[in-house]
Length: 257
Image (tube, rainbow, N blue to C red; front, side, top):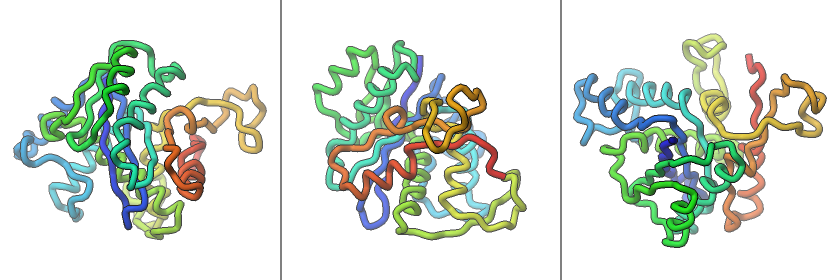
């Protein structure tokens, strides 16, 4: 059984939204709530929010580092859509889950899908998911169902990557400790965000003409995310669709240092 958590990020100038689907082998919520308690926090009120201001010593920054460590233990899929289509976000989440199940990248088994409380899903999609043996938890409180906080972080990070791909932001950050680079070296924000997510993105290892080595090479470092862990809404403009696929469609797992 897998636990799916889904949340969204609305990005600068409200041009697009990204929904992140976290696929975990266990219920993450008890672990996260226990961690906040161990830090002297009240899990029902002191949940992690990716939009909160952070400093090197802030509680929110410490929470973020813990959430980032959980990202390494889960898989991540995503939905890209224009902001004016936000009422269909939950429906696109269902499309993504079904896409993953049909691709056999997630075993057909009993699963639980937990959506943040502001995300709606049409009845026909709810029925279809139940036919795939996916139990639904709608209008979930992200403090109680704390795994949603991981989806919140992932959607925010993925949104930052797409903003850079679209040329809307151009920000540098320090590489930091344990990055494989000198801690003070300045890296593009999008690169730093991708480096923390790339092993978690869901895709299919396959030969990609022009990029991959020989089709039979077992060390192929590329895998296809588009059509597997990436769902791009038909309502996207051609520009948004192209940029989303350029940013997320193909993932590279080779050495980056």
